[in-house]
Image (tube, one colour):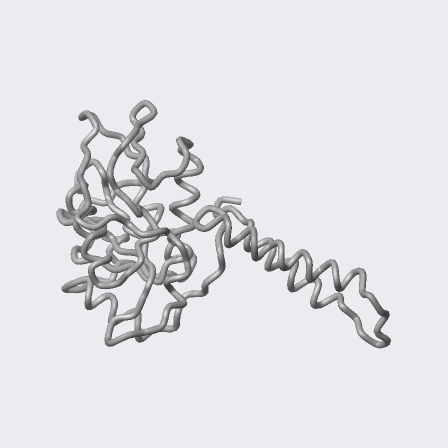
Length: 230
């Protein structure tokens, strides 16, 4: 969740590089050299580790990794004690939370920032969600919590995490309504048109049962428009 409780006024940190669009497209980009265009989500405490999170986002981008969330971790607004960053499109705690979890689900890996070992409740939720969805979790430091430590792979650097992910099977890529709404809507529309053609064919094909194909496309539509907490 990228709405965090702080006692201090808004603390704004500028990124060295402006963020690119949080699209899934980079994961399909051609591989060049030893580093590939991977996607990631960064988790950590805005209260305690804001500067480290900004540095991690900047470092990941400098190595060609597309950071889905937080795409621009500058705090720009708040509702009560909850903070919103520049890349948050809405001022809804639930939508921001759901979008961040969707980003985790569509990442090749989750990068955890906890330089002093502290992991808050929100980041703990994100680690659990990543593990449940088959997304590996890496970090330069391990959590103090003994249970959480079992699920985080400690690496010396971000480059080491990138190389490890390169040697693993790629995480699935499906356009997501909260991350890339236009791509998801376009894909869902295409699937609906295909279902329409199956249900209302121009000519009747003997001995052809479209049921399984309709079910498959229906499931894909559900994936495209699903919310992570539903």
